[in-house]
Image (cartoon, rainbow over all chains, first blue to last red; front, side, top):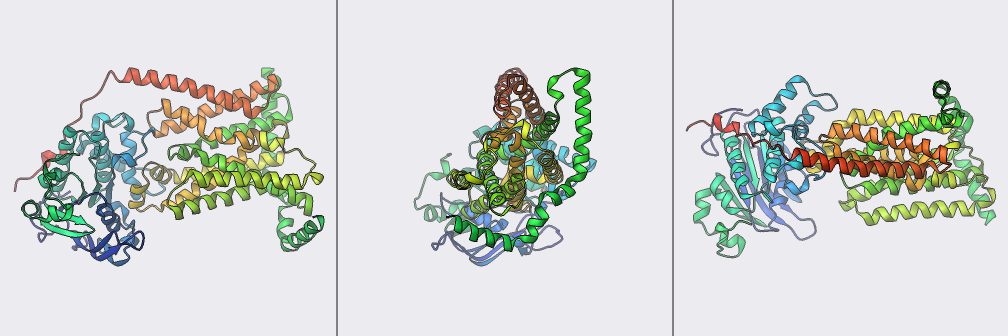
Length: 262
Length: 349
């Protein structure tokens, strides 16, 4: 991981591709005839820390799935590292952390076994080498979970569990970390530690895309905010977002949402 | 009615003549002959064990085959069951077992009507695997394994089976009880050999794709993002399930076969800390259940399938108690969360 810290979207970190990490251009998408998102233009450059916010049903997760190639746009293009997203086959460059609810809850599996999954795209049908195991241990160390490496993941708190998933992305040596509302159901104290972890990873050069409903967390931690409700209402630096009326327009209320924690 | 059957029989006969020849018992036996040699070897070994231990259960030829089949079931059922149970797919084994029963009925029907001469287990494998693919394709298009479609597949399979068998009752020489409830004494060399083939295929496929199956089972979306073809691994899983179900059906019977996919796995989940551990523990629990169950059923003269499941459930109940004790003991020591190492590397700007 490089320690160089990009200051703006233009100070692009050296990557093999040079271009944007992920890009949506003129994208429309609907599960039925009614579009969920319309005319989305979004570009994420290496080293950025971008948060996508919006009310429930605003299409936040849809945009994420389009970017990751899990959905194919009806019109427009989605690209990952320059390739069309749905045909992108360099999966180890992506790290994904879901809402904790989506991971199997009762399964007997240790933190180390979860983190090892990050190496699977690298080893395929083969076995993990000593080097792979070292990378796994390092990733567990980076998120501060070494003492829990052999713990069953069901015995962990929500915050600890999400750290394990981040470690999985680190073990995969991902270039882009995508998090879909990672702090739902995580206690407030762990949430702070969790965002600190994300920030330090970003300082080390990791590109982060955060889908988040918690506006306070977003304005405190992300560098850039994309405010969405079917279409993009705002896309720019976080401090400009705080001063703009985008929030009120997208959420349909001049809300005191900024103080709320759900 | 019988005229219609004659026409149907004629059509089927004309169309599948080469296939029929290939599957005819004689040709199949030739293919399986190395396995028959292995079965003889195994039988000699167990017979010798019976002599030195003096256990009556080990002194019958049919028990030698039944024990071998049971040992294989004890490995392959929890092996596949682990990947089903942790995705809340426990019911799929039951659904496939009932479609396998339709396969048995189709086999018996074809044997009676056109003298196909293949073992019904072979048609059961084919029908169960096709049904497995069908269930998977339905779930891919509807985006969910829903219990309604599973229940429909289950009932359709069983309804088709009972209908065909009742239509065919006149020509039917073999009782369907052995398929419904399983039977130790009807495990033929041929069906034991077929089971060995299924066993090798299942264990080999799981051994090769273990990483991918685990990733897909644990976190489907992350697995897909990482580039795995989730639908292909799902198809593999359901096809292997179909094979396990048919293999285990000989002893367990259609109605109880799904228990072997679920109960040992559920027991192992209670006492295991890691996934690897849970795989081994589930196999050990399943082996205990089949061997104890067969032993008990032999001496008390009860149906093996039922006794095996009762033993498995008793083992599961003990596992729950042991699991609770483990948790109670381990809660006393909780390590501190480590600090976040990455922070130290933060550069000043």
